[in-house]
Image (cartoon, rainbow, N blue to C red; front, side, top):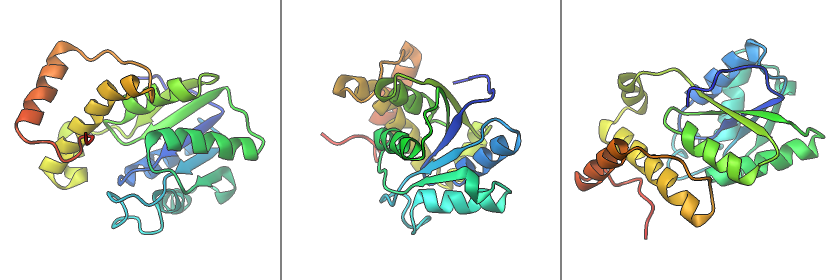
Length: 198
């Protein structure tokens, strides 16, 4: 989303199958952008083979390996979707006596807009910034390891940006006509494994 990074009260590393979220979160912590880091995410079908103990657990381990003190990390190991990532992290923070006014959401590339829209819908009291590991499109494809799956992920993510506001899960985001056209062409070409059912 191109947000300019600055110091915030807390960061939330959103669960996914991309360990780069944990690595980039650790880099931002070491740069002094926040004192507290929440990792959120449980065991989902798409990440269980990579992170059998749950996304948040593996993310925490990676961040600690990279120099983040375990005492700076809060763990939310149950969330199964973006809405739960935000809601459950908010509760973990409240339970720890932390009421932030600024939050940095760290996600995999391609997830920033959806996480922003979700947080703005369900956590209106905070200012939300988003970040993801700087990665070229080719780098993203390589990180996923399967070009079709990578495109399926992007198509599914955009579908959620379009559809979630209608379901009350997120604020509406502008989707330019050329982006919508590319989305429709990719769906027609069969990049559909990550689309919402129904």
